[in-house]
Length: 179
Image (cartoon, rainbow, N blue to C red; front, top):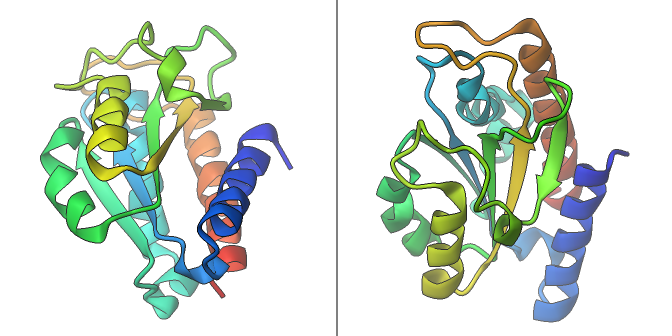
């Protein structure tokens, strides 16, 4: 298991222990962020859209997992997040991390103020700061290193592969924690 997957599992387990709730009652919101007109910047929204298509996840219709396709204005979705009252919000976004394109990393949101977020109206770290203060929840960020974010480009094959991997791993984690 790669580090981001183990860190997500650790966070869910820690919430389970701290809140003394059954695993399946931990409310998880996965928010895909990005601009589908800017190539690899669409990674976050592609992850959420593909998770929404996952047959096992759809069959469960779990009331404790919320998927949000936030596009390039995630701050517009604070209302649904507030109503859902998540314990953990997982932001999935393209992140300029100066590593190999298609790399996927768990990023402490507090350390992401210098990451590129030029295609969004609000940088993810500002959204995370707001969510933790307003909703009193944990916030985590999964970043996908882009290859090309040029206007009107499609996602690059290397980022498509990364998105498929993230979807597969998130699906496995959701199915394990929410039987």
